[in-house]
Length: 230
Image (cartoon, rainbow, N blue to C red; front, side, top):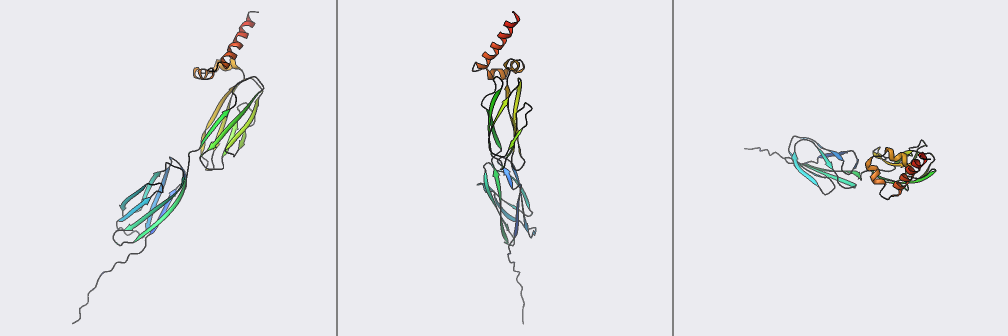
């Protein structure tokens, strides 16, 4: 008599893992969306380990693809590694993905002087850091003159103000990904008394500290007063 018996054998194949990030170029403090999927999806529970490439990771179980959001606190190239293992079949797969994280776009803007007699020659300097190069910047002198533009991260421009008034010079910066930085402004004036009449208390307090501007305004006012009594 012959008896036949059967034994169920399960073989573990490799899982195909898919790992994507949006965007692939981000900024420190910005949210990165991460999608993790695998095939075949059998409905079995899978052990998931996702290493974000910055010293942090997440480990959990899921039977379906997962979405994550991660915020990086340092700049650099980050390599993510995802490992998925089917707890029933033992099938396993690993996938890596890379993204670049840049420091937040930043800029400085300064002028070697902000007041004086006309013609007033002012040298503006600025530096741009963070973000992605090449940069794109526009410097508007605020007096109707043509704006200047450039792509360098270091800015040095000289401009002559040849008429009385109060002017606001503005530096606007954008990086290669189109991220804009809030404009940096500098207020200049070529008529102390006119400025004093329109300035806020805070502006006055900040600018008369050295006594030079205060002296110029008092002298101007005294001259006007003296003229009235002649």
